[in-house]
Image 1 (cartoon, rainbow, N blue to C red):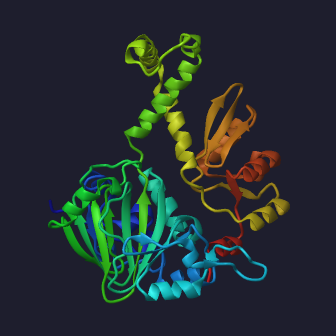
Image 2: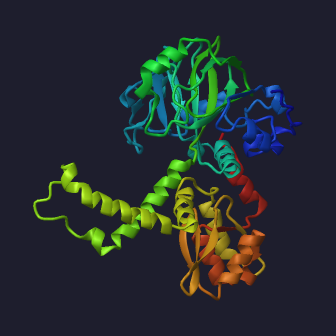
Image 3: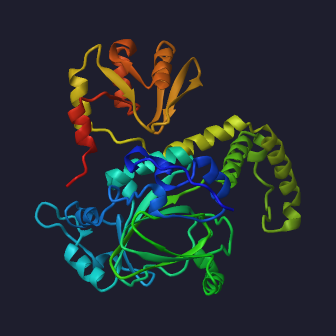
Length: 425
């Protein structure tokens, strides 16, 4: 089906999902999300080459001067990951941590054809921290970011599938991708590709669903389960892989079963010991107990509310990602010098909300649970609604507590905010 793309504004004006695809989010969701791969050439994204996200120069800075350690780095060749000892050592006087990157060893391994894998860049590289947080907000699913730097004419990993969706952004060189349809649709985290090596190899030997060459700025979306293998062409290749750890109905089932288990633990009949001499390996001996527990579980399951399930999954969602970074030194300095007209702003991506809790309320979000007294609830609710507030309107004690809880941050002078945004160089 032909799909018209949306007009793309400059890269700096686009965030999250709109930075990666050429379709409006609703069209992408309806036609591709979890269903079908999509290749988006750089030209369809307004010529955005992604250099601000991860250039080869940025890769070299991460590898040589920024103290990268395992497990934030892996090295692989022909699908086999090398032992950490092959490319790590101590950092010398004053920095004797033994698992720091040995850039000399890494240079040799890369020159001999190994692929460099930078892991967890959504925690260590600021441009990708921002992209990951914006994308998580757009998708509603947590993401992680890795990068793969491959020497010319090398294949980093053989045909395989991932147990999460991915967006691939090529940032340097060219790489040919061969994509095949799944041998196991929508695989779960405990259903990796190596459990189906034979089927994967057979499918990968056939005609691909897509055979494309990715160039700088090209994006490829792959739903989980789609087979893929990539080969660098005539120069060093680098691409960013954004893994989307999708929520699915299995997570809903987990939450339902957890609620049922808690309910059964409150029932004395379910806590009672089985008979003396019980043979729990005998189907005949266990039949009555199984039916009794089945009936109790069915009754308990019928009592589980959607709100209980949402509260359970909401907690998991909070723990799955981090809020926007704060500047500890600048923030502490602002606390020491603020006044009634100083302003607080809600920390980005903190997912804070007020929930009733006895006579008061509790503020829940990605920084934990924070009690809120009845007298403070309206002021906190106003901050959540408006996104900012004067210290004088909140009250200094409450304002300070919100900052120290990581829910809000002082509105910093422009120079401090710009310092937090600077790319290390």
